[in-house]
Image (cartoon, rainbow, N blue to C red):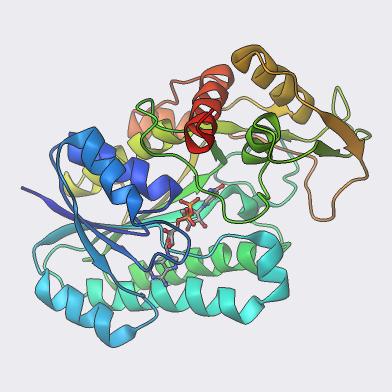
Length: 340
Ligand SMILES: NC(=O)c1ccc[n+]([C@@H]2O[C@H](COP(=O)([O-])OP(=O)(O)OC[C@H]3O[C@@H](n4cnc5c(N)ncnc54)[C@H](O)[C@@H]3O)[C@@H](O)[C@H]2O)c1
């Protein structure tokens, strides 16, 4: 069986990817320090796939432990590196925490990976690297804009680190996947998103408001230059996103990549405004949502949605779920969490 390391594999996107990997016959070992996830996720993955993935509770900032781990697992055929801190606002408050966690862990994993016989690496990047792109939809060749936050900067620096390392190590094969806005939960409702504290993303805020945890949703700005005045994003079902990781990994294992460092956008290609998301949620869930229009929020770009041509053509992957389906799964997950 092909052994794959998934760092951050108990997190939101990581856990859904572990499920898809196991269902494709991969032998998964997860590293997670549980800094933003729960050990219960392991049971969820096991319940869905019928197989418990191997798990090591390990902080990837501990370099010697990372080296010891790779020393024990020389037979790994691919690494999918999700582990990172991801709260944009917190990164502004605590930049060094973000640079330490997101950059050091990447460097330590890459350094250890270079000692393995097989060196395939997938990196979680983000559409945040494009900032407010000049043209929609956004292609992979759109210019990288100055980062709005230390978090965004860690994704830009992370990509540079991988690119530079690939340049001088022909044995290393890497793919950076630039995610748009992942939402939703597995159809089994055994795993989903577990935001800690007040969610910063729209969809968990919507579901928590509908569940009565929050009084009302604030729509930040309705005077943007978009058809209804609210910001536009590309919301992708997390299971579609997870499947793209399996395809990308198989591309590297099968040596079907065209260069040893590739970049792909992962989105649906469709932009939806905040008001459209609210309408879609109300339709899919049958719940009326309490919301108000609030002033614009600093750092929000007007619109961002993906040109998925490259991922569709070269990976042979396409997002399958629509917004209604993704929102319904997010709502079912929220109801499950709250026993509604
Ligand atoms: N969710 C999004 O909207 C989004 C969008 C673009 C990119 N990304 C990126 O995708 C990746 C996964 O995101 P997610 O939403 O699943 O986040 P998440 O917080 O749910 O998952 C990250 C996991 O990594 C673990 N982790 C963090 N630091 C660690 C360390 N030092 N050692 C070991 N484990 C550590 C956390 O405990 C968590 O389980 C991240 O790199 C994130 O920046 C996420």
